[in-house]
Length: 342
Ligand SMILES: *Cc1c(COP(=O)(O)O)cnc(C)c1O
Image (tube, rainbow, N blue to C red):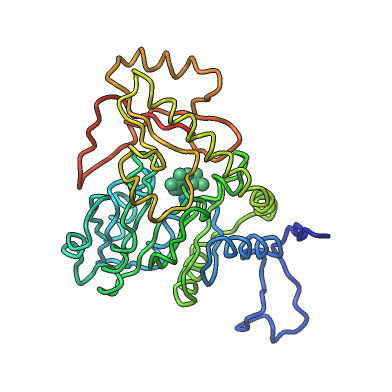
């Protein structure tokens, strides 16, 4: 068979008593089987790194590095444009664990970031572009500062699918993917992956996942792997179609601004051009001011765009984002409502 077998496993049988404890031999099904290893290998072929940890959701992939690298009394730096549930995690669970979060402006300069680093700062958490507001970090400049001061950096790299942006070439230690999006690609799987730049971080991530007890079903891993087989081709089409729709929207009188990094008039286009080799099919649109009723009528009236969360599947989606945009280091000011199209 060209494909790995889908093995449903809790128990593995070992042939010797001496194999049960304290060896490198796999003794239990929680860490997955052949299909998991094949998926991990494929993800590393795309993005590089020393190891991959699969986890049950993209959000779990965002939160696990904090558990792995921080303890009570520590401090972390998180982009103000970060995925909403990652921010919620920092503000609730991480805070209750005694880890303090400072949010920083997504377009912060390296020197200003350096000023925010404290003796107990352990992690710099990036997301580029922000999945609602599409700011792009000067990633290398920020990770250079982190590295010089001895803290690790992680990036939520879901937008690029690991194809259009290569975090390890920009000094990042941990790259996070919500495989739920383009890798799975068909709106029928929830899964996350954490790619580590080196073996030492990978070991910390793996041990923490084990301590928490995360496991990923072989059926789901198989679906993610199956999706991955066609991802490059789908991405090309997502990119081409989204650029066409975004460029058209930019001509509309109802639109104040299109937030699509590949459009020359878009904010952060220069950074995107320097660091990325393509664009996802996910972008933002700021409308000119209108009433809530007008906005709802437009969104509910679409024939081709469904009203729903997530993205990266085969279906076109749109959501109004304003309720999700939470800021503390910066203020989000826009002329009118913010929408996100996939
Ligand atoms: C969807 C998403 C996640 C979370 O993925 P889930 O599998 O839905 O938990 C994390 N980060 C970004 C940028 C996302 O778009």
